[in-house]
Structures are given as structure tokens and as C-alpha cells.
Image 1: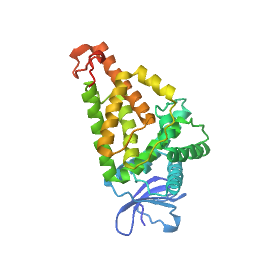
Image 2: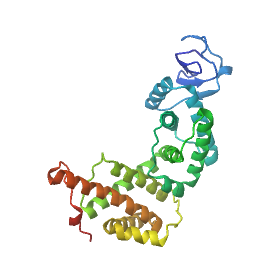
Image 3: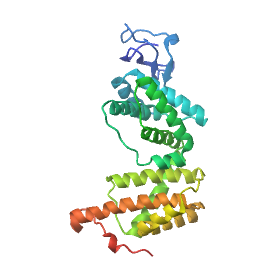
Image 4: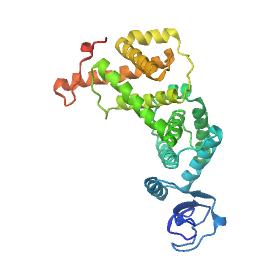
Length: 302
């Protein structure tokens, strides 16, 4: 193998026997070497052959801008995750997770802490992936001498979930179809149009992505929300709850999946939040805003 590009002392770009570009990693593999020089296969500890040209370009750009320690840490977590789940993750996780770890370490070292809005849901509905992510925090803390908050485990869990979903393109397409169907129910029942750039809409779609994956992969959730809490949410957000009921009807009719009170509880909250954002926009901008919002008091449920 001959060096085509040096990213740092431990990571270089080269080619395999078929003439395809690959990234290889090894301790000191590029030390005192130049482009065009030969490297021994015995010096290679890890090889990256990403099938997507676009993903390979992103990976090269990332590797060139960070310490190889982040790549090693990401490798350790991905290897652990694949062993724990007994499945191969989509290659995109080498880019997304490595980049996330780099930014997470930067944030924590600079006193910037981001809270996860989905921590409780992720712990409940993705127990295996969350356990992996708690292990990932141990690895990150050890390798970078930091103390990551539990919220970071929720973010890492999302990367692991995405890597499982994207590996199965047909499921990913079905997930997007279900999200489209559910958001259409909200639009029609609540008579609203979404601001797709808003944070509440992003949170809603993120929740629906996990929700749809559970249904399509037949991962039933435990019904653990207390009746008192569920009733409190129904009383506080009656219109959003009616919308959640309509979504439940759609899911049962089309997918033969019965949504339990636990899932309906979370759907109600997310629908209520995104509609509250609409009400806020009406109050601030009025009805002449580019996207026409309907005041919540005008919403009629059939």
C-alpha cells in the first residue's frame, strides 16, 4: 500500500488491491513518512472502506479535522454496540458518532451542557440501545478525562437507532411514510400547517421516527405511565388528546397495531407542544404571517 494522503501520524488514505480508496489507521503509521511512500499491512490496525462516495468524502473531511483519539473512541463504541446488538450498523455511524463525540467533548470542556428532550422516552422505549450508550459514556469519560451527563447517552442512542434503521432502506422508507400519514392527521384534525423549521416540529418528527420504528419492527412498549398522570395530561391538553386518539385509529386500521396509554401519553404531549407553538406564532405575528395559522380556539374535532 502507498500513502495517498496523510491525515495525521496515525491515519492515512491509501488504496486496496482493487484500486479503491480506503482509510487505514495504525499507531504511528505515517510518522516520518510522505505521500507516495509505502506502508506495511502489518502496521494497519483498522481499515475503513465506506461504500458511499459521498460518505467517504465526509469521513475524510472529518478525519482530517480531528484527533485520531476520537476515531479510536468511536470504533470502541461501535464494536461494542454491534456485539451487544448482534447486528452490523450502517457505515454512516462512523461519521455521525465520531463527529458527535468530538462536539460533545468540546461542549463539556467549555461548560456547554445540552439537555435531551427525549431522555425519559429513550430510556423507556430503547432499553438496549440506551444501555450501550451508558457504556459509551464510560468509554468517552475514560478516554478524554471528562464527565458526560446522562443526557449525552440519549443523543448517542439516537445515532445507534438511526444506524440500525438506515441499514434497512425498506424500513426507513416505511417510517417516513408513517410519519407523513401521522402529520397529515394532525394537519387535518387540528386544521394547522406546520412550520417545518421550528424546534417543536423537529421534536415531534423525531418522536414519530422512534414511534414508527417500534411499530414496524413490532417492539411493544410497556404500559407504565400512571393513570393519574395520563388523566392529568388528557385534561390539560384535551384537543391534543383527541388528535392522539385519531392517530391511534389510523395506526390500528392500517398497521393493526394497538397504541397503549403510554404511547398515547407521549403523542399527546408532542402534539400539544407543536400546536402551542402555532398559537404563539398567531399571537406574535397575527394572521398575515406567510404560513396561515389557525387559532387554537377555532380548532374543531370531529
